[in-house]
Image (cartoon, rainbow, N blue to C red; front, side):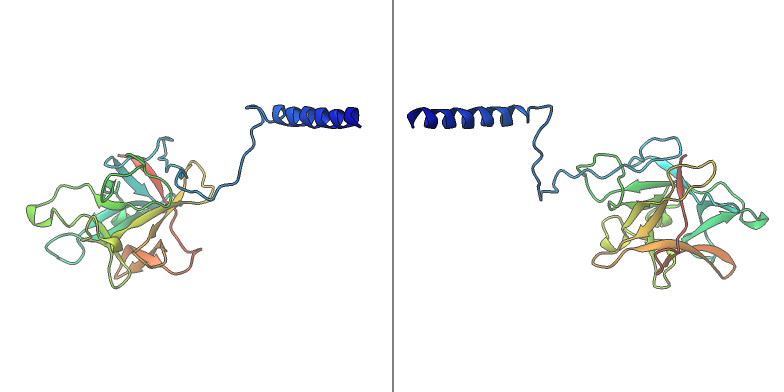
Length: 217
């Protein structure tokens, strides 16, 4: 009986050694975890295949046929231009767009890279007067129009970028923009003709949005 017990103990020991060896560094045991602190979201890319970076200048363009880049204009004889419009392939709306910069309220663990579905503020990079120098950040007004006059740090002026599955000839890295005010559901950015101008607006239908690509300015 002692021999049988010794045999069983030896067999058990050999089985444990074999089990341990089967999970070396080449075959590690991956344990489930509920910790998301180390989750790294994908980067947003421009048309050159480079990550978007905080503080760099970009043109935001609708790549669909007949559409064009986003730009800033004064369409209401205001002290400061605040209309966020979209160029189109018709004479009165042709143009190359107004460069924008993506900025954050404070330093981030992401460094200077823009990542999918992370909060950013969008700011036109444009020469302006002292009166209008603080009127270049995007926001959404009560009419659901995208305008300028927002503030970096205002939780209601946050935008996010989401990847789309759209395949558009000659284009890669196609995204959509979302307006994501604090404590409210994000809404897609779409377009609408209002008072004869192609305006950027928020839309309720999740399938109704403008595709955008980012081009280094």
